[in-house]
Every structure is written in C-alpha cells, then in structure tokens.
Length: 269
Image (cartoon, rainbow, N blue to C red; front, top):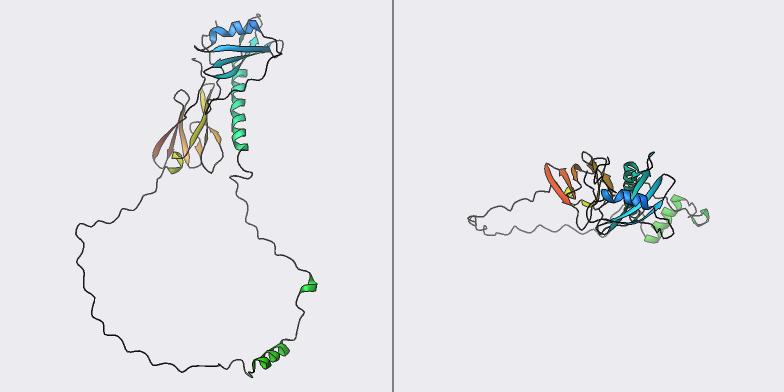
C-alpha cells in the first residue's frame, strides 16, 4: 500500500517564490496519473496539468501556495500509476542547481578570483628617437664653460654662519591637577562572527532525508551547503527546512539566519 502524503516535489523555497512550469497547452493530459497522485497531495494543493513523457512515465504539475512544481509518475508492472521518488527528487535538485547558476551568472566576470601580480610591460620606442651617444668629457667642459666655472666642486655664494641666538628664559609651566572620576575610553572589540552575520539564505531543499541550503554573503559566490560543511570562515551547524533556518558557527558564537518571504514545499513523510 502506498504511504499517504509522500514527499512531493521537494523544491526550492526561494525569495519571492519561483515557478518553472513549462507551457503544456498542446500536451495530452494523463488522467489516470492525476487520479493516482491526488490522494498523496498535501492539503491546499491542486493539480494544474499533466503530460506523458514516455510509455511508462508522466509529468504532473501541482500548485501549492502559489508555486507550481512537477511530480514524476511511473507506470508499475501491474498497470497502476505511482510516484517515482528518485525522478521527482532529481528534478528538484536540478532546479536548485539552476538557481545557483543564475545567481552566479549575475556576478561580474572573474569575481572572487585573484589574478597573479604581473609587471606591466614597458613601452618600446623606436631607435630613431633615442638620444645619440656623446663624449662625456666634451659635454662636461661645454657645461662648465657656459656656467663660467672652472671647478664644479667649488661652492658658490657661501654665507658666513650666523651666531646662535641666546636661550629664552621662560617660566616653568604650571602643573594641572588630575581629573577626578575620569575613565579611559574602552577599546572596541572586533566581532568574531562578523562574516556569519552577513550571510543571507536564498533557498532550502530536502532530498532523501538530507537538508541543503543556498547561501551567499557580500564579496563571495553563492554556494549549496549542508550541515557540517564550511562556508568561508563560518561552519554550517544545521539546516532546517521546516523552520527555513541555517545555523552558523564562527569565533565561538552561534548565528541563526532565517529565510524571509519564501515558500518551502515539503510533503509529510
């Protein structure tokens, strides 16, 4: 017996919602697959359309909370339609990767990469414009003759040293009393979890019991992570799809980031 309310779609909960349903105006509906899927849908969802992918596969589009997502149905040997969990999960994972590629493509080319330092090539000049070689002794004598000096090392216009000024007799400075109750200004302490606090959560997904999240931060590329992985200087401690939260750990502090204005479609097991 098929378990009621199986995991459906398992698609991204993205800011503002996201719908990737293709146009199926000319596709022939597979009514038997729709009827087999109807008891498995979560409350509040409805079937939009369906089409046959092959002799044994059908694609049924389901709307839930404003988002439309595909569910893959397969015809078993007994002639009954049932949900293909692996194909449905693979479709959700491909949509998550497509979102990551879209956000990465919006960044400028070469963003996040460090180019090696290379010396700038010196401009080259044709040999025809270079100063021709001259005799150094002749040029020295010519310059001295124009300056009217026989020896360039004899100083000119040297003034006699002036006598030093007598020291000024100034009165001693008065001593000021110390300020009462004055406390030194505290030195600001850098935030050890500054990077974790800057992380933003764009989407979450649950596949086969494992939870993943699409996160980003200023000056970094978006990444799909799960619990136990590192993102720059922060560690992903937990990814909660029902709560739409990602828990980060950095510098001995725990930072909880919550996804805003999003919808996550996860069927009850």
